[in-house]
Image (cartoon, rainbow, N blue to C red; front, side):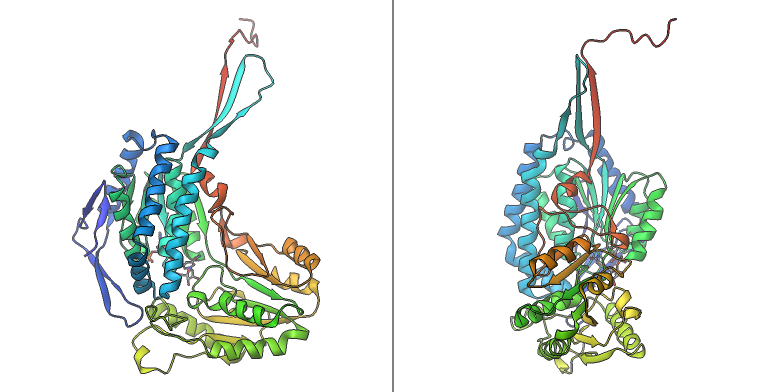
Length: 489
Ligand code: NDP
């Protein structure tokens, strides 16, 4: 049984509600969880409010906060194998991917421990004698941090590390589908002696506990990663009371391939871009845009290699692609496959569940390649969030840029070319928050991450990721006050 963590104590839900998290590999129960209701949400926000208004965290020094984040990084590495195993079981991703997630999470805590003090404010030259003017950065207050199911540990770290570095207090809610690594992370904070109320954990459904958290008037800032429809709803709710929002809402990311790049490298990376974590990645390169002269050989090799991807248990070292997160998510991807076929896409690989009887209870789907795609097809326009890649063709650089920008999203894009000038022109013209040139997927804790258009509002990571959680206050100090003489009386 896993509990809520409120005001420094592990606790059942007030109404005794529970739910279960299941293993996507075989649909068996993994653990029972306390399921938060309205009273628990209120208790968690109240605890965070009191900790912010009266507790020591907001008044602690940057050095103290950085030391605690550094300790969390050490504890994450101490428990690396155990955390990776938990994450792999709960999400279905491979153990190697889960290990990389723990390492990336560690790097995020170390990064914000390192820069917390470097963004404390600045001195302004007022241009007036006797005046001292400065901008100080202060925490925003109570932050509600809502993370998705694809990268539970990593995504919460992008929010939690800067929020705590800035001196805020927090209420976090992982997805009900993948809460286990977040519960373990909260245990590490308890071990590191974070003061009570600074970090509160709610387990429960998005539509109930999540919605109640977002609507709670005691929350000052909401940071959310997930689907567009939920993001729009959260933004509308946050408008009441003019609370701050930061939204990361996924994308439909073009991966543009020019002729002349190393064939094996580009095909290999196109597979990684599309099928890492079974394509359940907000920045997945799910929309390949390939130059005419290369197109036919490229798609043939891509499909042949997609067919060879080994699908199975994330804990099996031979596995390259795990299951999807849930029966609903697989059904959604299968609807897109049917829709793609009805719209005229050519199925070159996958499109079905694996034949192996060992996998029949899990939420598996073979990596799927659709060629002959057009920009007006639904599978090309909408985020599928599964192991499905579409391929369109282009002839000129201008056309490639036009297609790459022909989306209402704008999270990430890739461009593959051996012409450095072309690489810079295309990267400059693409309207996406990250553009990878001759690579796909790497991100850096020190570089901003976020989207143009419907991919979201605000930035995570980098200095901007810290500033999301800071208020800026101008302190103007006149050291030689004298009458202003605006009025004669
Ligand atoms: P959601 O947007 O529904 O869920 C993301 C998080 O928000 C989860 O913690 C969820 O909790 C919570 N949540 C759901 N509804 C509310 C609400 N009304 N108020 C507050 N919190 C809420 O994503 P889904 O899991 O349904 O996935 C839908 C689509 O979103 C995917 O198919 C994909 O396209 C996209 N997505 C994008 C991600 C990204 O990285 N950008 C990550 C995940 C999904 P709970 O899960 O417990 O319901």
